[in-house]
Length: 75
Image 1: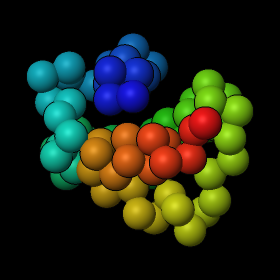
Image 2: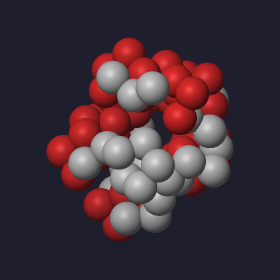
Image 3: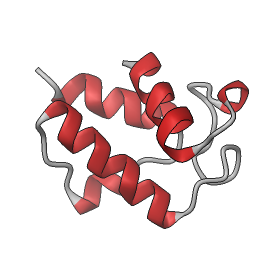
Image 4: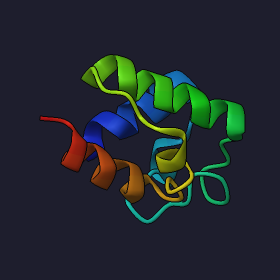
């Protein structure tokens, strides 16, 4: 799951691959903005056929948070 999220961040949002770790904060370490976070959420929803609630998005502080959420949600 981590590698798939990393691939989306690098290829779709032009994030430096060296910056993407499980502990990396999406905003402070990777530098994505709220629009890019929304894009990431939409990409995850499309790729995994799920719907991510607005309240869940607020918990996405690190790459690891996204990976954990998807690991629990995607069947």
